[in-house]
Image (tube, rainbow, N blue to C red; front, side, top):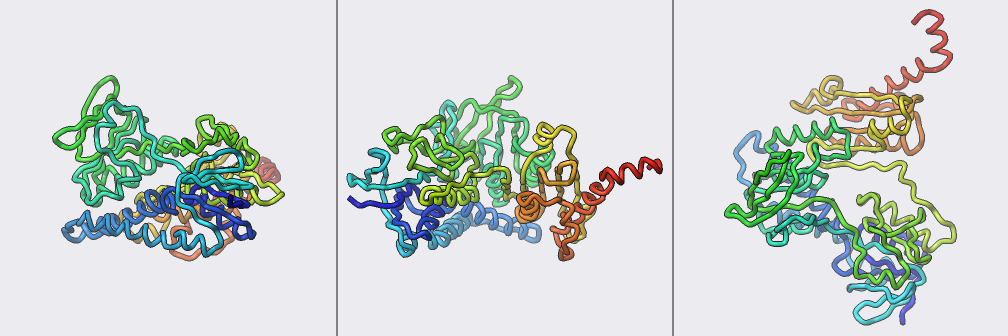
Length: 465
C-alpha cells in the first residue's frame, strides 16, 4: 500500500494551491481527481465566462459602427479554447513534474487514514478535501423534464440559442445575461427577490440592472418560478408575482440559483467527518476528523476562486506544519464582471450601521461629474460608495465602474493593512486614470479627519464655526 504525507481530493483552484504549497515543503503528495484538473474555475466558471464576456464586449462595441453577424458556434469554440489554454498550466503532467503523484478516479474514505480509488487503497497521514461545488437545483415542478442549462453546460453548447431564460439574479446570471444579449440572444432574468444581487448595495444593484435593461436584457424581479414545461418555443416558465400567474418562454433555460457543496459519496462518516448542511470546520479549516482539512467551495462560506486560493494555502500549511493558522474573513473582496464592473470590499452601509451605529461616514463619488478620465469616453459613468469609521478607516467600499475589479484592490490594501483612507491623498496617481477617483475621495476623508479632531472641533466651536 502506498503511503503519503498528504492526500488531496479534488484539483480545482483550492486543491491545486494546496498541492503546490505542500510540494514546496518537500512533502509526498497524492492528488486524486475524478475529472480533469482545473475545477469549476477553468472549465465552467471564471475562465470561460470571462472569455465569453470579452468576446461579447468586442462585438457590442463593433455593433455601434456596423451590422455584425455573430457566429455563435465560433464564439463558443473560442471560449472553450481559452479554457484549454489555461489548462496547460494545470495538467497531470504539470503536477507530476512538480513532484506530486496524480490519480484519476473517484475517492472514498475507508477510515480516517485510508481512501479507496478503483479498488486500490492508499494511506494518507493527512487529507485535504477540495471537492468543490455544483449548481443548486431548485425543486421546481417539471424541471427534470426539460433540457436546462447550468454554468457547467452552457459553455459546452454547440451554438447560441435565439432566446434564454435565466433563473436567478445573482452574479452568474448578470454576467451571462449581458454577454448573451450582446451576442444577439434575447435574455430574460427571473429573480424571486425584489431586486437582483440582493446582498449588494441596493442602489448599485438597481443601477447595474438599469444598465443591462437599457441594453435589452429583460428583468422579472419579485417573481417566483413555480413550474417549468416544454413548449413550442423550447421551454416555458410559469411564475407568480403578487398573486398573479404569468408565463415566460424561450428556447433555453439557464438555472443559476447558487451552488451546493460536493460532500456526498465520499464516505465522510466512516472517516469521522461531520456534515451539517456543509462540512463542520474550525478556524484552521480542520474537519471533525483531526487529520482531515478542507478548502475551497466545499468549505465555504465564500465560493470564490481567490478565496479557494487563500484557503488552499492555509489548509495545506495547517496539515503539514506544527504551527496552525486561522482563516480571517474580515477583509474579503470580490468583483462582478459585467460592463460596467461591480466590485465590493467589506460592509454595506446597512451592515456598517448595524455594527457601528451612527459612528460611520459615508462618501459618494460620481465619476461622470468629477473624473476627467470618465469624461473622455461617452457614456462612461461610474460611481463609488465608501463607508469609513468615524476616524477614516475603511469599513466597506462599493464601485460600479470601468475596471472596478482593479480599483477595489487599492481600497482592499488600505483596508487589510488598517490604514486610514486619507493616506491615499499623499500617493501620486497617474492622470488621467480611473484610480485617481480614489485619490480625490481621500482628500475629503482627510479634511473630515482634520475637522473632526477634538482640538479642531473645540477651536471651531470657540470661533463659532
